[in-house]
Amino acid sequence: MGISSNMKVNGQRLWDSLMAMAEIGPGVAGGNNRQTLTDDDATGRALFQQWCEEAGCTMGLDKMGTMFARREGTDPDALPVYVGSHLDTQPTGGKYDGVLGVLGGLEIVRQLNDLNIKTKHPIVVTNWTNEEGTRFAPAMVASGVFAGVHTLDWAYDRRDADDLTLGGELERIGYVGDEEVGARKMHAFFELHIEQGPILEAENKDVGVVTHGQGLNWLQVTLTGKESHTGSTPMPMRVNAGLGMARITTLVNDIALSHAPNAVGAVGHCDVYPNSRNIIPGKVVFTIDFRHPDKAVISDMEAKLRAGAKDIADEIGLGMEIEQVGGFDPVKFDEGCVTAVRNAAERLGYSHQNLVSGAGHDACWINRVAPTAMVMCPCVDGLSHNEAEEITPEWATAGANVLFHAVVETAVIVD
Ligand code: HGY
Ligand code: MN
Ligand code: MN
Image (cartoon, rainbow, N blue to C red; front, side, top):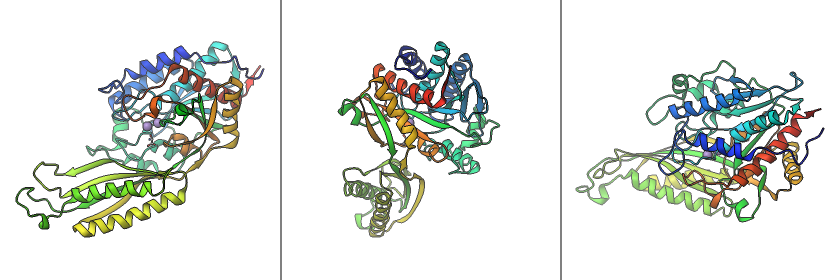
């Protein structure tokens, strides 16, 4: 029995699960603040595990706290098909970023149970630790360790604004597993995610067939000037680190615009010391986020930034350090998996188009160790990383149906 177009997920059950998870770690404006390794993250993890166990899955946990819920296949030796994303959110995050991919994977298991369908390959629903990289930089750190990009010790030593370590917080919430990170081998990995951009909605498409992911470069800049009185220090005597940050922030914007239309650049994080109204900042630490589908452009943006920032620092008399704190090359997803996604959208009669992911995802790292592809659904006004992030139940269901078909076709239905 092959997969047929009438095999679909239970969209209402998926939507209800999304809304139940959204109750955990609420934001202040209708979204979520369920940051990684907080008590709210632990509560969300426990709910996910409860649902997976209710669906008959056996749970696995690796040393980075990534959660694996396994539905058995008829061939226990066959490499599993993995499907998932992340449950951690931004501090002012939405209800769907990451969560749709994890609960979409769980819905596949639930619906296979309801339809009493068996697959040759096991299916494993995955919740990757710390995809967002806000509390602990960089983003996608657990999938990065899994793909061999970071070491476990380096990841454990990432520190948050309160100088707490990732390893210590993982221990505190009780999610240090015993599995070696990356020991699991995958037949394939699929990730469903909201687009987090405006293209699918503007083009009136139900589904994005993600062929590539753009590359990312996070540069942390530390400028050192001289604290002094904002009132009594004559302008020529000032060594103003805050002025340096302002000028470099403008430089970042100009560099991105110089590579229009696809380059993007911004400063999203900044710490000002001592952050007093009447003290000229003596030190600032801020992070630049450059992205583009072409690695050469990302390199050019970094080179222009380093040269321009040095001129600015020299002119003001600031000390400057620039450290790369995150980054990955542009990604081309697996042709076979991408075709499975496209065939699913066509079989189900959904409008679809190829897409380059603007945001980073765990799939971008897992693509290094297993055949990988992504499914995307539109989001309202292309808005994400904002509590007002919104999708429609129809978009969620369409994305989950395409994910269902791609995963089950790859896992091979057994009569
Ligand atoms: O930064 C990103 O692209 C992802 O949302 N963590
Ligand atoms: Mn995400
Ligand atoms: Mn995100």
